[in-house]
Picture 1 (cartoon, one colour):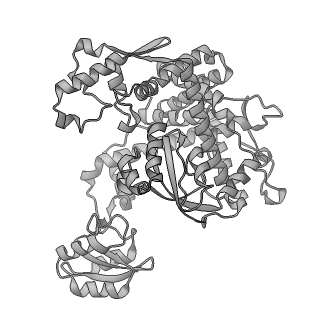
Picture 2: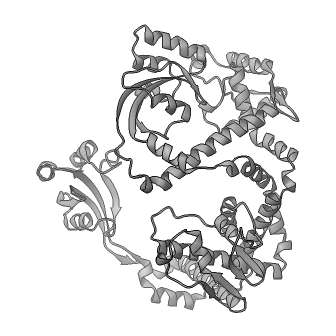
Picture 3: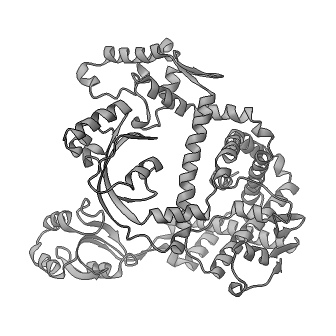
Length: 574
């Protein structure tokens, strides 16, 4: 089984959480493929919106293409069953390797995904709250006592920005002194937004708590939200944002509830031992700069590695296991070894998957229909993957003569387009562009000026170096660079209402690649085409001997459009 398509298969399976229905009134049939009925539920689990605006007919055409893909997959699955691919070691290995993953996914869907519900009233309330955008500064603290202490300093007249710089644990505070810039409703966690959006410019809030810690807010400005469009125009976006926020909240609440069922007992003596060992290994000047939440596991002997840092119902974690498991997490997500509460939270974070797996067993998730359906779907998609890539006959690789014929018949595929290595300065003033042409006499001068003033995004750091550009990137800039002599400035040319001047340094004319240098590339192209042609022919042949009916009227009904927008029949056969 090919690894590339197996990876793609797993991505698809991750997005599909169920299997097939039986075509009830609540789950109508969209297509009949032999004896198999593709239901609306099957399709909705498979279909993913492209995220662009469609007319009703365009959306229908896109959905129809996706349904055709689902039908083709079904043809592959049925053929795989005929060849007993469902019993192959490759398929069974994939299913076995993903059982735990699907247990957790089913548990997650049960307690979180299925609970996400957004009403019309929710959407309109969210839209109403987006009337203004506000600008705030904040100070983030670890505890209520620290927040109250800073709040008292504010009441005593100390400057908000300086206190943010001195005390805020927000990593950005050293750079922005607590200034969050402008934001709209929905971009901050609820606890923060509910305080900030009822304040007026100049007000300072008392300390309050969010999942990130304790905040103090200073409102600095408030103005109409110019990005807010009509409610109807924003409905889909609002729905997406609300669902995402609700999903995040449900996730946090569920993880908290599970972790409360599996209380963790931290062995503080082991944490203290780590802090003590740090003082033995490093001088004070190094310790001052060394994060208290990390430790080099290589400095531990065998006995030290086996020290049990924490226990919980049905499990434990050693010091070495924690250090290794927490490596991928950012420093700010890990508690210091001298902060027992924060360290315990970090341990729960790295053991979360194991704890959830225990909870899945307690809830008998492996006995649920959804879990069984998910595993069967994974198995059948893996079978389709094997069938397509390993079981459809293809011609042998091309010999020397076939390679040469392909090269002669497809010369344009092996044409290296003309290119020119170009430096550019983009400015909004034509007179400035013309003045720079006269003033810049060397490439070093050109590069220095580009690093100061060019307006093309990301190009100041590169001193205006566009690299090798081809004509299809920007015809005007390319043509100007190609006709300008090396050592001279070319332009200006108009680019999106601005003006580009260029300094070409190396030009390459278009040329065909030599046959001998690209033989391997030709073989790959021919083999890929052979496989695709064989697959296409196989699908056509399979469809010819399979009774296939597609119910377009049911597909239209999914879109909730009126009859005048429809353009097509009700049933098609293939």
